[in-house]
Length: 156
Image 1: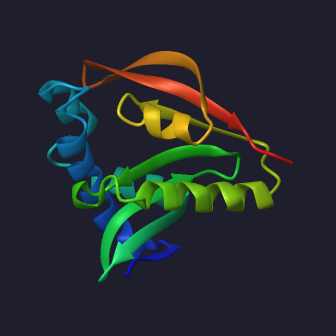
Image 2 (image 1 turned 135 degrees about the horizontal axis):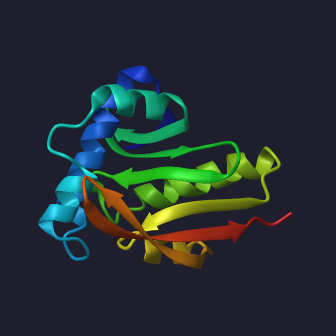
């Protein structure tokens, strides 16, 4: 049985581990080894990650106290992070997290949500009604990574 709950600072390291595992194991069809290492360095900057996670509305899905996925968003409607652990991929975890965040954002009066999706995540966001606005090439440690600026207008 899985549970959905708001994350707290004690969950940050588990979220970082989910991110690391997702990038390492779930993105190899779209990004090469150098790109994956630049995106998720083997030794993450925990202080920077903790600050980033603390600045977001952060929710997670867990089973048996193990984080299976998390979403981090801003009250402006920006979806900053949405990752699932490799063992939880394609099991509805991301959908559950996204739908919950969308509901909370809609209740808060947000009428448009946006994200910068990896190439791997684009089909997920398209299934949830997002449209591609632009492709972006970002640099991480001198390595180029392609991502997609996407958005969705929420129903009134």
